[in-house]
Length: 457
Image 1: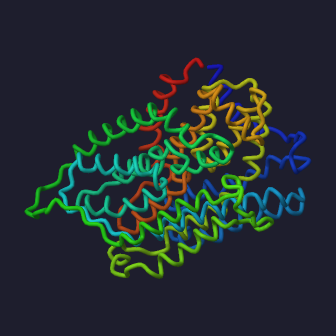
Image 2: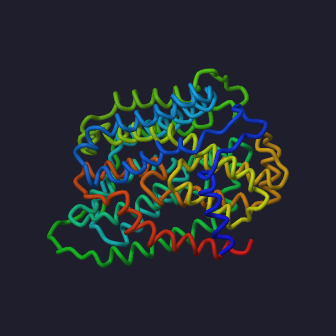
Image 3: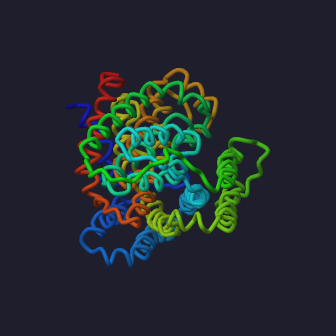
């Protein structure tokens, strides 16, 4: 009970008062608590809009997201005079959308045809394959590459749970083994964690979690009976548009073209983007212009999914600045009182509703501070990973795994949802997703992970 109270105090305490910032920050005071209202309102509208006022939401969500974001921007510019936080958030957003957009468009020019009869075992193999390659081409790349063939192979028996488990495994949990897999881990890599640290310390949690979710999926999918038809299947898998794999390779290489990774890479500061983002946005243009139009039509490709993500997340990135700053303050103040369990649950729950990358960095900074290290020095981060691996492991697992807790937990979640809805699949609402799927399925699994690996530590 004491641990539970500490977890909730960490999550909620930032909403109880106004705090003065300590030294080392670029702003003298933290934002007032009422400035988390635009973020909460945007989340509520994302949750309720498609359910209760669908037509209004579909028509006006871009204006709503931008308007609520502007409230925060104006507050930071006029009231706090804090330009640095805004520029930092803009840089993070441009990097985020550049990666998602480039992977989305490049993978849209690849057509995978699986001429096999849909069976629970085939679906399990597809989900397992997606979970593995998510560590090579990222959760976004794996999601965009496989969601359309996954839908088509299940044509005639596709249900929302198919897509939900795809989001669980391919769009989130699968990418926990490498810095390429998910943005939080890449930020940890930039801060000084070795590239192969994650696979060494996470694989024995990743593997049973993936297997357990696949077993649950298999049990559910086995009950989805459909009338047998006379269609014959060749059993072949055909891939078209293979030249776009070159674009995917360029995107993956460009991820590391960053001054923090390669000292010879020039910084474009004060611009809020770098050479990496220029390469990625160039891939968006080139891969679309050179794509086979027949493949695009076969994939039912359009820009609506990435457009929806771009508008909603520009609002989310802007409005969550006050929440993240208040959480960062509390995490550092309470760092010496927090144990592995609290770091696991606090990082996880907040990663399900805030962007998991900055959430991860905030708690990484708190963990380092707890043991007298400084996140500003790569040597400190490297040493911390060696001396206190269980702490780093806990927040790494939580940030990636809990991203599946809601539609906004990770960028690919919304993109997959949008693609499926445009394919005619009726997806559950924001609340229904959590009430029917993520809470009853994921929370028990994540609790089991906690009991086995972190309880009492």
